[in-house]
Image (cartoon, rainbow, N blue to C red; front, side, top):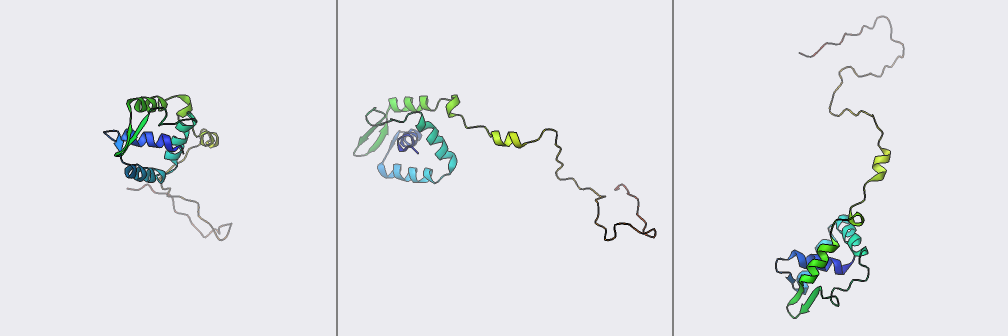
Length: 136
């Protein structure tokens, strides 16, 4: 996970674009434990800019009160997140390959005349079967 891309996203999520260092640490801790989707997204975005330096590029300013995303930082993040082929989530090709065409799956339907296991494979002549009746 690129910490710098995550910092840009966190600062951009604040209305003022500013956050204290403690607030940034707290937000990073929450997002880092939020699951694989977040990690995959940040990793995808960071792979597009491997040599990113948010401070030397002027995307983030630091002062005694905290960190602030600049207009250039917001524009950079907007361009980075623009939908292109390389940042779309991968399609589940394995699932499509496994699925068979034309297979019917019935869910939630009960059959009244289910095949029952018989102890004796050949029923005797004295056993009579009841005909199927439609429910009323």
